[in-house]
Image 1 (cartoon, rainbow, N blue to C red):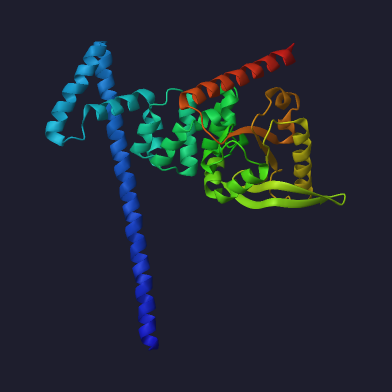
Image 2: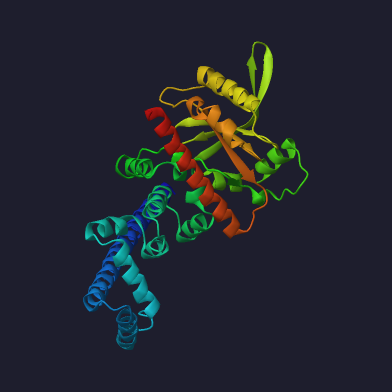
Length: 352
């Protein structure tokens, strides 16, 4: 009996070991295939681009793609459509340096690359590349993030271009993550199913019942810790609406939910919570806690005058019903432009 059990254990270990070899080999083959395929598509796009540039005629470019596609499909099948060749063209236009392409294929599939190459703005494109690499998004998730205007909603989009690039470089080269790459404005909470009349308690309860979706909207590194966490200061009890922890930022995140407009009192309330947590719950190696106030109207001038960034507090709107995408996109672009104009005005004022 003992001998039989030992044989079963050995067989199980052998099976596990062989399965690991097979899985590792499959992964290596997939990486190798993706590398060859990506470099092939880039090389094809580069050669077509060079041919078109030599002729200096747009119409010639369209015709050469059509003719090439017909000939390639005859020999290699339907995969070589005009659409696919245009993907190759765009790929080589956007990434002209083969070294950059060599880096890309190590972390992103061709399907990821196809989604990214049609983003016009280079900073926005780099944002999605780095965030996709960091969180290992599937192609579907990447597409959803782009469609949800993640870049435009992220705090970093409202910073000067130089700051955006510096923060992305830090993430790329040193794996240092800025909070501005994490926190958004506005947050989309349409999945809660809340309509016109609801209370703060209703909002909080809906978030907890849809916690998985809420964390998806917050970001994958957020972990839920507590609801209505009680803290006592001078024999008086206070309650933090929601308490989270962010793994990569290595800090606690206080989330306060407000139905109306942001007010000066909200800052004092959250600042009190943050200082208490910093004093009583901060562990060695952790960064100071961050506060996030979610409201229906953040009162931009209040936010600016109160210099909330110095208190490690962020304020953002939340939307329980989403407007038309084009209208939302227009509003977000206007918000980004206004934020950057205010930054430049403040810099000019300080330099006078």
